Amino acid sequence: MKIHHLGIAVESLAAAVPVFETLLGKGPESEEAVADQKVRVALFGAGESHIELLEATSPESPIAKFVAKRGPGIHHLTLTVPDLPKALAELEAKGLKLIDREPRIGAGNERIAFLHPSSTAGVLIELIEERESGARSQESE
Image 1 (tube, helix red, strand yellow):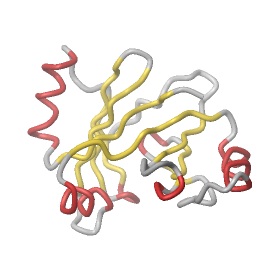
Image 2 (spheres, rainbow, N blue to C red):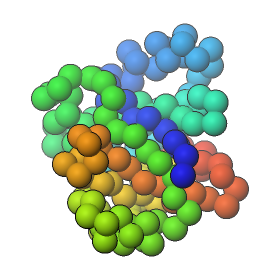
Image 3 (cartoon, helix red, strand yellow):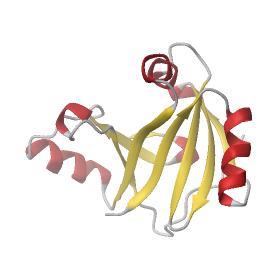
């Protein structure tokens, strides 16, 4: 298992992207909308991991609710797993609470699932199925 990315909720990609361009010395690798999750995403490479900036596209978005309640900031930590359905079954059997019992499609057309923070020391954990190439899809809107 390794850290795939850190998700950061932002009020505006237009305001946040230039900050991370300055910090990282480069632009985002990709930008896309994820309609199912009601977000726009900008993904930056950061060493072997990524930083994912998340902007809500709807007031009903989990990101909009997060920003309204807590303000912008770290939203989730994403870890890679080789077999997502197997990992979900094993973690649930070990007592972790799942938000997603089945994988769903996230940014970059990746298979993902979330674990509930009530069972993960207060941290929202996203699991992402590791691709054979190890590279994240560069599909953008």
